[in-house]
Length: 325
Ligand code: ACO
Image 1 (cartoon, protein in one colour):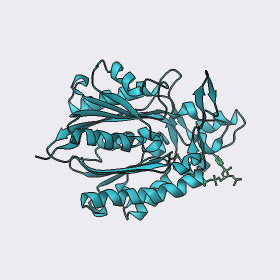
Image 2 (image 1 turned 90 degrees about the vertical axis):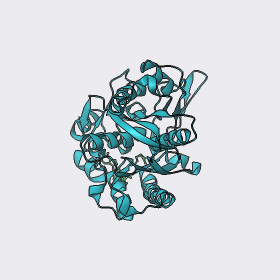
Image 3 (image 1 turned 135 degrees about the horizontal axis):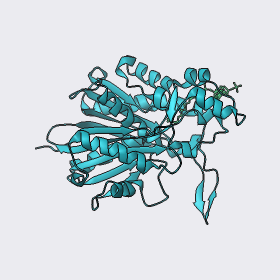
Image 4 (image 1 turned 60 degrees about the vertical axis):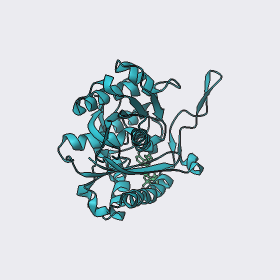
């Protein structure tokens, strides 16, 4: 009998501090940085984002999301035998946020590690968990995307600081004799490192280089739409399915125009695209599981639906996962 992996529960968490564009614009104006609700909505589709309070880390947001996913799956943390956290804003240089999350969940023993693929992190982490389940290395995985991007934003740079938010999403992925995950497709091309990065690093007790996010927005935009189409077509081909089989496209939530461009290329109407970027901003590795969980809890996504998850981000990295929910 074939062994597959299947999502059995989803969860997510947003820190309580919510800032609308107008509220963020007012805060930025007090520091001499000019932006507006109109500009942000028109160029990105973002209307609000959540920021974690000082001292709240990715593992704290991940913990709340994980608890909700476990509850939805009807599982205890002690039943989990693999923890993967996708994050680019870990609690510490090391150990991993996954190890810290494991301890906060009150369990020990199972493997726990982070995956760093920026905004593609959740798709990467889900692919790794799927492979480990299919090969019998794990049977019940907790896969989390958790970020505090507010910590790496330069609030003097209006071209980036209005785009991102904090949050976490999680799924429980379990071994099953029915798919589940149908196909996955991952890529990276490190020549694009400079268009989206946080170049600083820790050395000799200091941060060398800037610890703030910097981005060439137009270069990212152009690359993103092309690779998202390629990844979508690749997983459909691997699974022997077509665009018509997709019930819901859940793309990385960076910019509504990137999502509209991708949907257009796949000939999918926007009412088949899960959109949360308006309320969450870009939460990097957390954006896909946050969008997935909100669509599951709102009743949009139903058991048996075919979902296309797509990530793209710094590296450059990109990929897709096609699954039956
Ligand atoms: N408020 C007001 N004006 C602004 C702001 C702002 N927050 N930011 C930039 N501007 C100004 C610029 O200074 C520029 O003014 P100028 O014409 O006088 O020079 C003008 O707006 C246009 O700037 P552009 O950078 O050309 O604007 P563009 O239409 O390209 O939109 C954006 C910028 C939204 C970043 C866009 O390039 C984009 O969405 N790129 C994709 C990047 C992305 O989503 N990244 C997320 C992370 S990567 C990922 O997750 C895949």
